[in-house]
Length: 201
Image (cartoon, rainbow, N blue to C red; front, side, top):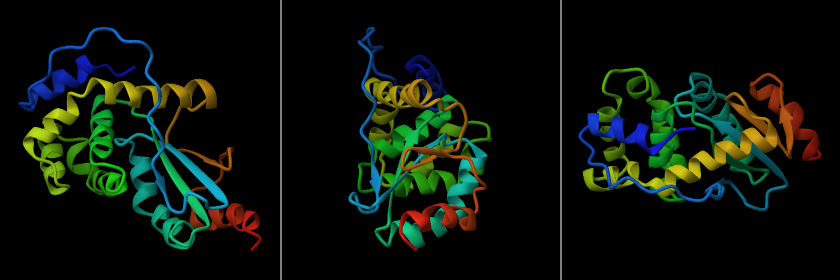
C-alpha cells in the first residue's frame, strides 16, 4: 500500500512542502471513474494501469490510439482507466491527472505516458514531473497541493485495493471488456475480433 509518508519523502526531495501529516482515517472509498467517450456506449472497457508501467505506456502510445479513433470516438465504446500504481511515482502521476479535473484527466494521462521515459526512470523524477505538470497548467502551488492531498492518495489506493480484492488484478495493464477479463494480444486486430461481434459488425 502506498502511503503519504512515501510521497512526502519524495516531495521533500523535490522541494515540495508537505502538509501536516494526517491522522489515521477510516477506509477510503475508491475514486469515481472518469469516462472517456459516450457514457451510454454499448461496450465498456476498463483498464487497470500503473503510470510507470512501460507496457501500459506502450499500449497507450500505440494500440490505444487506434481504439480511440475506431471505437471510443465513434460512440461504440466507453473507456475507463483505473489507477493501479506500483510505486510512489506512479501514484504521484495519477494524483496529478486527477487534480487536473475530469475534462483534462486523459490529456494529463496521455502526457505522462508519452513522456514516461523522461520522468519515470531518471534521477530526481519529481522535478521532471513538475515541469510536465506546468505544461498541463499546474502552478508550483497547485502541484504541491495535489501531491500532499491525503484524501486523494487514499482514494487512489482504494481504487487499487478494489481491483486487487474484488477483481483479482495483480499486474498492469489488465483490461476488462464488459466485465470479462481480456487476456488476448494487445493488437488492434485482436481487439476488433472481440469488439466487433459485440457491436453486431
